Image (cartoon, rainbow, N blue to C red; front, side, top):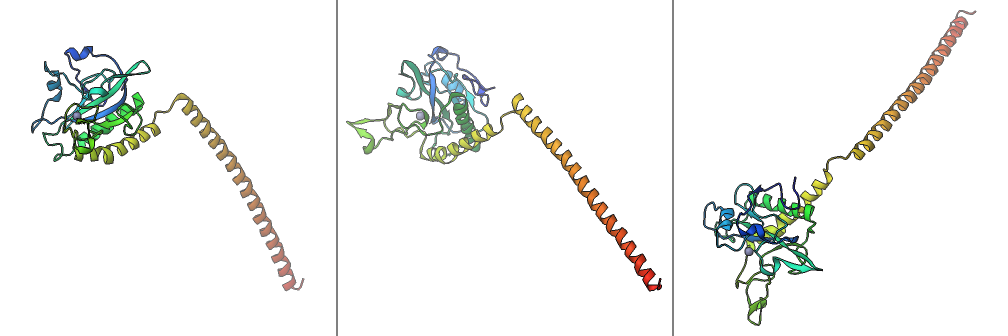
Amino acid sequence: MSDLERWDGAIWRPLVGDEANQPNRRPIGFIVHTFVDHPGPTDMAAYFDRDGIKAESTFVGPRFGTAIQIMPTTKRVDTQVAGNLWYHDGEPVGYASVEMEDDGDPEGIPFTDDQLDQLVGMFVYMNDIHGVPFKWCASPTSPGFGYHSMWGFVDNVNLRDGYLQNPWTTSRGKTCPGRTRIAQLRNIVMPRAIEAAQLQKDTEPMTPADLKTLGAYFDAAHIERESLRADIARVNAKVDAAVAGQKGRTKLLRRILDRLKAGG
Ligand SMILES: [Zn+2]
């Protein structure tokens, strides 16, 4: 079962270094990143576990197969600078995140079908277990879903006083996870996640109370059917009697006609 710390749709492979001591914070949202690795399969979990690698995401999404969870969802992850942890009414909050494998070409290589499935599952988990609303973050500290560059790629529009005004990155020119993948998030992942969450809600296992209600309904339906059967029997009996009466009268009429013909 999924819980606050873990999504059961991912392989659990927690980082074992200093990351285990990172502070707890409540995840109010979920941010998608692209990993920019080398072509071919990359062990992203092992990369984040290396000494000297300070950043880490909550999940990693390989191009093929199942997502891997490397940090408890309840712990701070360091993938989006000011969005990692802050205090809201005294409570530590922040964004959970995922790094998606891209073989070094996030614009040219879209998310695979496996990765789309992984992302849909993560979105549903974050909504279901952590209450993250199915909407794109309205600001860099709003609840919801987001992607790293959503407050601007570096261009003249997004530059103010010579600095990029995206509080989730310190890098100029950050386009993560790339326009191709951003379009997939908006056009495929979010709608599919909303649909899947609805389906999950609609197919919740029945509670004992549900079963009792359903049992009472079937009992009532059975009784109704029995009384309907009795009604039909009564109607049939009346029809039979009427037909028998008609036959009796017809026989009587025939006998009278026979007597008249015989001149009796
Ligand atoms: Zn990123």
